[in-house]
Image (cartoon, rainbow, N blue to C red; front, side, top):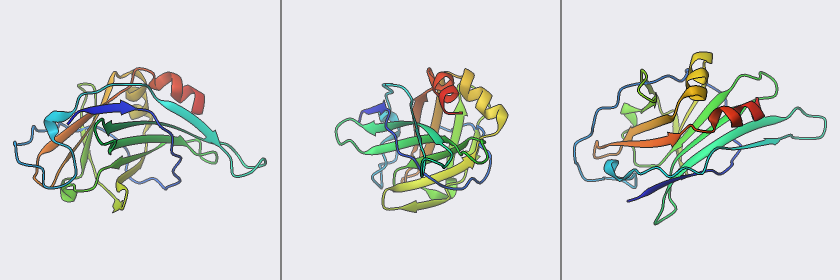
Length: 181
């Protein structure tokens, strides 16, 4: 399966949990996929950039801004990874929401890594009909890494315990983030 990263916008309103960081991703075995999640070796990035949008509940309400990038399967259009970073009007502290596909090995969670930096495990908090979600505030040091980095790697396991790594290009991250902060 071929993966194409493309940008879309969906504004989510969720509360944050643990801070984002980075973790090493071991290469998964060549187990067959046991769920709709893509095969690990099928990821090939194609970036169209990050998209930023701001909305308000009313004319008098503060703006809430977000930026987003997605990776989808080219043949089916299935969403594989959605990374949404928003800056709530009240706190002005960035929060990340990451949507992953269904059919994951939930106890393992996901891993996030910027370039060759230190990587960290992040728990998957919930799943519903559209996918599984990670929600977390973004620490200042992680935000700096995202702004200066070239690639965010989002990794997770399917039910066959195969590791799937999806590259999310960061080329225009800093420019777009400056528009929403």
